[in-house]
Length: 290
Image (tube, rainbow, N blue to C red; front, side):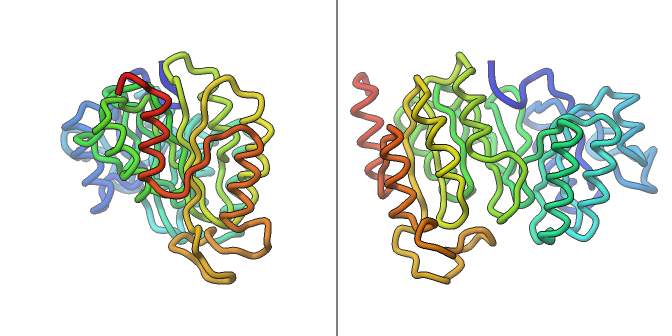
């Protein structure tokens, strides 16, 4: 099993005829992700890497049974594209685009919840279950199928953790990047609950950042989980008021510092580390055969 995506997913790319969309299409085709179509208004009837292009999402759903969308279009058009996908019946949407306004993000999240649709992002690196489906910018060549789930706000740190797991021959079950903006769809807590139910996932690596309240919402769930959670919070030495990379990574109160987030996660039972080298040692202690 896996969470969110698998070999039975039917993926579309909204914006497939753009430069970014074409690049993702090429990789998905090369590594056999279940990409069934692309959507670009006015480009219906064309093909990108032999993948059919339709004028609207509704057409892709009716002709290809599409259920998952990867959105790569300019920020000002994202809200309309997400609403179109939701209304067409898409059940999982990954918003890769950066720069979506807070108001548009809020409208997207509210509408998705109303329609029971899962949204990753905006500003999400996506989701991937190795050798099954890749709806992300994480390159297939670095991924190995395994037993560790990753839920993250940071694409860069996710790459680092994947490299560690590959080196230790643990691999990953599913990687979920929830996005680095202040307002996003799925939160850490939602993904933790999915991993807890997934028999293929033995342990979870939680990558958080300064800013926001995710860790406080996740703590009660972690406390109730049977699976081990290893947690890393980026921005340990970040000064107050300084935004660190992501729009959502800014300390606006004492409770949003890395130190306070580490404390609440540790009290919930997570194994909290300060740096990646400590994560490697914790994994070695847990998986004695390594």
